Amino acid sequence: MIFFITTLDRQGDYRHFHFDLPELETGLEVLNRIVAKGEVLVNVTLIDGSSIIHLPIAAFDGQPCQAAIHALELDWRELLNSTIDKKG
Figure 1 (cartoon, rainbow, N blue to C red):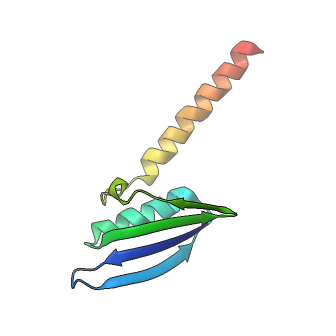
Figure 2 (cartoon, rainbow, N blue to C red):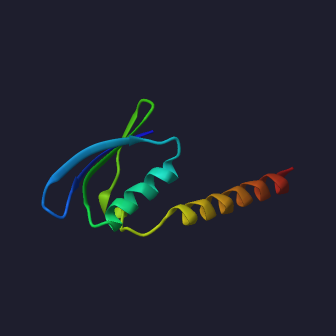
């Protein structure tokens, strides 16, 4: 996954950069860290294979999110496994 980002720094300068990460959760965490350092996200585009996704910049508030996403994933796995067990 490649994240293309435009930020506005504390001096009022626009910065354009990108980074490539294999996991979405890690990329979202990086975006929150950028916001936590005082940068303003102007645009975030995610390219994953042939998909292009424009991420909502308002979703990034500078708070860590990776642990919450991991907990949600564990809950989903538990729910999916319990549904399979009841049907089987």
